[in-house]
Image (cartoon, rainbow, N blue to C red; front, side, top):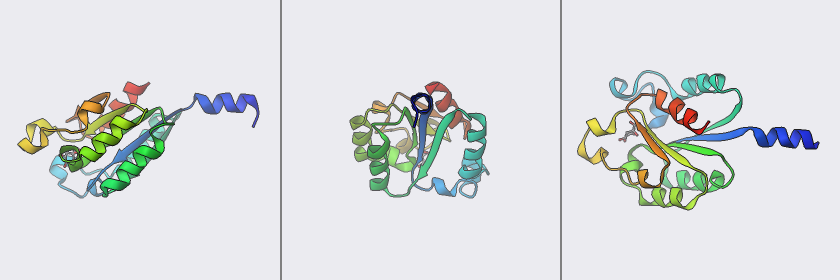
Length: 149
Ligand code: DQA
């Protein structure tokens, strides 16, 4: 690889989106809350919208796998956008993983968690995140990407 290619590679912003449990069901799940679009379809439009960013997407329903992913990318990526689903409200382990990595993390929720059940008002992750976005639907992910630019 030439020095010019190296410089070019290093210039590309690397941002990962990590979705937690049940978010694989987007488009089918509680559509009145989460909408009718699948995340895969939305991710394609995001990639088109931000052609100069290296965007990646990972989803798991398993808490430990989400933690492993944060460890894997959390020292090399420029930004991580996480929607940890219900783990947001329960997982000290994911909160510790976010606290332990170097890459800045933004928390996104599709629904407005503050207008829902009381147990959704607590986020263990928020304290360790650069910021939180809640209630703007899938657009929240786009807003999070823009905040990294
Ligand atoms: C969610 C909100 C959580 O309370 C819920 O458990 C989810 C999705 C959201 O994106 O609005 O699974 O994170």
